[in-house]
Every structure is written in C-alpha cells, then in structure tokens.
Length: 125
Image (cartoon, helix red, strand yellow):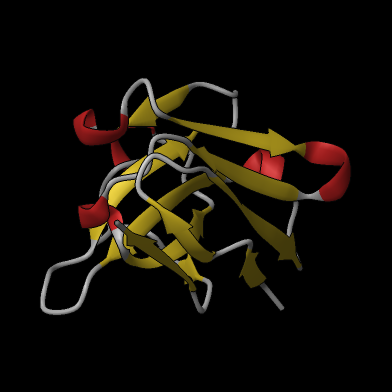
C-alpha cells in the first residue's frame, strides 16, 4: 500500500527556515517522480518543486534560489529545505508521487497519483 507521510511543518517568522520531510512506504521513492505542492486557504493548489527519478529537479519560479528539494534513497524520504520564507507562503504543504518518470509532470498537481495528508506551514511577521 502506497503511503506518503509529511512532517516538519510549523510556525516560523518571515525570513526563517523550515525543512519538510516526506517519508514514503509501499514503493521505492527513487523510482518515482516526486514533488511538493502547497495550498493556501481559498487558493488553488500550486507546485513548489519536484524531483525526477534520475535526480533532476524543477522549481516554481517563486521559490528558485530559496528552496531546495532533495531525496535520501536509503530512508525512502524526500525533503524540502525552505529558506527566506515569506508571509504569502503560509499554506498546507503536500508531497506527491507518481510512477511516471516524466520530467513534464513534476510541477503539475493534476497528474500525480499519490498524495500525503499535508503539513501546515505558517509564516508570520
């Protein structure tokens, strides 16, 4: 059974940092496309970053240079290091996985098959 469990969310001040984790079970994460998405109240779910099975990464323009996505194969876990957080980045953050190894899907929330329950990130001034 495929399962994704996010952790690491919390409250942080603007300019602060958080590291989110997404631990996968029931499949080998390194063989899947995996991404982070976020959704703020009243807004659509949007892409944050993705990592292909071959290790290539993609980022939304809004987070380039501040966020880093990575994967630790031995732990079957994906991470999102978030630095210089902004108020508008308050949202529920979700990890997602899909067996299709397609670079083009990494930032498309409509494509992914498996989703975690999310972890809340709250940025305050």
